[in-house]
Length: 166
Length: 282
Image (cartoon, rainbow over all chains, first blue to last red; front, side):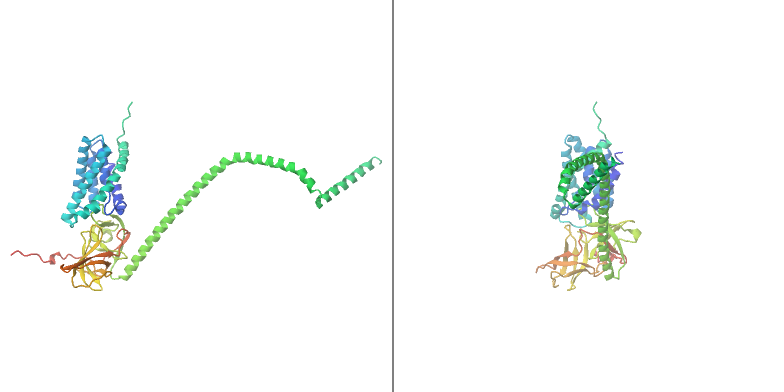
């Protein structure tokens, strides 16, 4: 159930991302809602489905995007790994972990994208990229991280209902 | 016989009195008297009537509220239906205006064959300036076909799948195309950037360029057909020690509001890479 539900969720997210969210940039930066959902799910899931979520979202976005699939595969699966490790260490502060992983995940995704574009597409000026794309995207991701965590928490409670104490 | 005469007399008297009162009534002499006599009756009638309406309303009002609620819901549904119709009509009008402008463009450039497509998305990566359109190889589209709007050049098709295509915008940092400036006929290269600005480079130093000059495709390189409008020169940078002039271009197309585009289907871009000189090892 927890793996199957990721399919409609990410299809919806990619449609939302490409058709609406990317039309409203802050400077040139846009939030990565798929990554935020992936982080939130990795923090909240009680099984190993986060790996499937990471793999599926990377393949889906890699298919839609011009960037090579490898960028999304490496960054999203790394984000899942980092989140699962951090969850084991800082398990009592999910919101704090969400913010930290959002920060790390955004930097990682943008670093890999920048690297790949410079290798295969065109040379991007580093400072302009940081000022116009990475920092605004980071701000938007951080702002959206808590509401998305709360939203995914509801989904998680539907899939993994909490046992009531007698 | 005798007993009848007082009755007759009384009847006559009463008749005369009655006629007299009637006559007085018609002539208006009895009005104050009637008013005094009727006032308590009217008050009583009013009280009774008020009580009746109060009781009647208390019985009938709940029914009326239910009717009103139903009517209100019906009217609200009607209003929302009409509002959605208005939005739909506004969208159709907007679409019609765009298509009309595109048709004008197509009529003004009859050498090309066009296929129209709607813009359905943008690349998820903020680093790249690509759009996704709802026409693909099933509609005869191929990689490299130029994409335009009524205002001018947008880009060219970079990838095609059966149902959709990805278009590389000329504002993308990886986009480079040969352009010609009017009226000087000077040639240069137009380069995209991450900010979406268009930069002009490699313009010969001796070319006399000024702000407002038109920027058109030159056709060199084989990626785009010649003479498609791109924009106007907005600034020029000329330095004595530099080999070329550079500048920036204000595009005629608003790349943030692309809805419907035209694909030039009878233009085949060609790859000139094999013709480019390669360094020969001694």
